[in-house]
Length: 375
Figure (cartoon, one colour):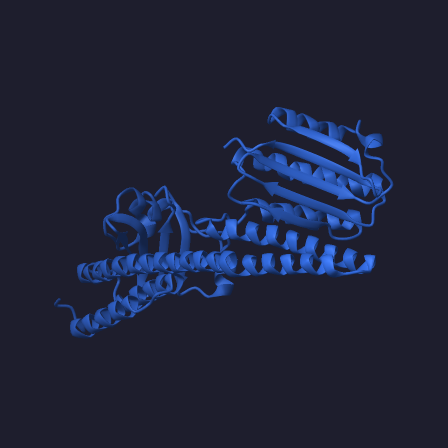
């Protein structure tokens, strides 16, 4: 390294590598990588473009040298066309004294600062291209040098190792979370459910000793509530044992439907879940279940004049059951020929199941929709 200030720049490279190696948060690491590259070769502007999983375009673009106001003025971030795309197609270091003179240059969008000298270097992680460092407008010379390219290449190699370490640490944290989920599930099963069972048995014993009918009734109501609680805890245990729960799982989708219908109903619907609702419903049945709940609640809002709407979704090894009850005007048969309910009946038949709409003994309507779980 024979350019002026080489020793100082080597020290800066060592310091930058040490900083990247000590950073665990991936987002912070990527930002510091772009900043370190700019400082290392005295660039006015710099960016790190992270490739999409298909390695065809830029999925993330981290910039240095342009403030937030300037970034907003430029508009949409680049996707990897023109000069930026050259490194995607051919991941090799690229130095240009004037990027605007290159035949692949697309020019700049409105409000983009002018740029001339260019240095691009790929970043590899685990032998696969992860992204590219883009540096423009060397402050202390008309163009970037071969030494500049060597320095940034060295930084990119260190960054690749740091990014891979960050990924590994993230996986370790995920495994720790899964182990915690398993421990919580085990504790719920071994401790909480057993205590609930014991309490239920004690209450049933007390009911046999009670002499007043109203006391017996209240004790039995408490036992029934404990039974419901046990089923709900078991459902939670199923989901805690699931190693991977989608961010947009079925429970969340159904609760979102309930939120959306609360305005039409005039109150929030009550949901209960039993069994592995997120993990035990095949993907092809999820849209059917969501539609059943949406149409069932809409039917209550339109026709029932009910003060409540209760939804139960139960998933077993053989069946998926949706029960929707109201305490409105009823009976349900009077609404059975509606188009929406006919669609739900067709959905059930299509999946090899059935839909039943019936009047509740205490007033209101009960909709039962059940299909085989296909598993």
